[in-house]
Image (tube, helix red, strand yellow):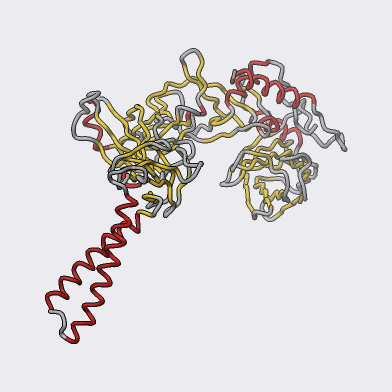
Amino acid sequence: MKNIYYLIFAVFIISSCQNTKPPVEDENEGHDHAEVSLKFTKYNSEYELFAEASPMVANQTGTILAHFTKLSDFSALTEGTVTASLIIGTKGIRQKLEKPTRPGIYLFQLQPEVSGKGKLLFEIETKEGRSLLTVNEIEVFADEHDAIHEAEEAIEEHPNAITFTKEQSWKIDFATGMPEVEPFGEVIKTTARVQSAQSEEIILTAKAGGIVQFKTNSMTEGAEVSKGKILFTISAESFADNNMNVRYSEAKTNFEKAEADYKRKSALIKDQLVSQKELIDSKAEYENAKTRYENLQKNFSEGGQNVVSSKSGFAKHIFVTNGEYVEAGQPLVSITENKNLYLRAEVQQKYAGALPYIKTATIRSLSNNVVFSLEELNGKVVSYAKNVSEESYLIPVTLQVENRAEILPGSFMEVFLKTESKTDALTVPNSALIEEQGSFKVFVQVDPESFEKREIRIGKTDGIKTEVLSGLIPKERIVTKGGILVKLAAASGKLDPHAGHVH
């Protein structure tokens, strides 16, 4: 079903780019594809420049069709001033455009005064600031025939290249990038059970036997709980034995009696009407009675025992029902803060030697396929067991992660445990891979509008990146997002190679 949606979306993009031809104010404004044109691509940290230009001839007007893409999200530059400057020696000309001809596209017309080799500068000014792209080795010829001949010689043939225009890529979730050469150690793939951190979880218990009464109708599993909130009352009022109301009344009466007796003897000691021993005994009895009474007063009322939450969090599990009889010490509810979670993974015994070298992990939700790195979750490797689990004969490994909405206690996650490595490997994002009948391909960029499909041999994966064993070199830029739509565009066989450009 997902591939059908991609196909429909690709057909829409292809047809829209084919059928949309903007009005042309000047018949010389676009580029004549019967003529030779130069193509050049440049990148800086913020922008991609892809331009097509007519061969430059001194004292003749040349056109430059420049496409500017923001690398932050590979969208078109839709607003901003761009100045093109052609500099040869001490001579230079420039043209400043306040806005694009079409979103992402700026059409420059420059007439150089002298011939020779120089450079072409594009200065971009937006609300975010200024940025500069420089194209070196631009040659302006004295003769038009020489200019065209040199341009023809510079053309590289790529008969198998697939055309996917900038206008098409700007409409989809598309990106390109370079493969990375980085340490890529052994990857252990397993599953993990999500658990609450024990240090962040408490269980409230009954301090006396009685009937449980919920204090609020919203007391359900998952309900938010604040510190100091009364969650239950436990009453034994209807019982002949172990009646807390009777015990509370007795404690109160004994306290008041002991307090009065101690105060009376404290007054009589001045006149030596009572002995020092009697006063000490009275004081001890008073303090004991006070302790018992205050303890009951803190936890009980005339309606029964109040069960109060000692921390804020969420009700993880409720062990009782409303109206149920409980004994002293019986669990009532577990409360967890859920700020941090533990992932308990289990690995096969053959990986025992690699466990001390685990440095990070990739975690994928089995419910929605969302992928996180351990660093994104502010996580860490907590421990690995030094023994084998008796239940499964596997070795437990525990990770701690920050709680996110996509990670629910009790659920299972797919985990890729990654070990340290001193050996570098060439890696690409998993989103760059296109699988075809068991083999894997990537789209290698010839220029920002042309791509070649390349078969590669892959190695291990950590759930985010995959090792490339052969078929690709580090300096080749590839499609990292949207490759499936490039494939569908090639399969359609109907795409005009220049569809969507300003003609």
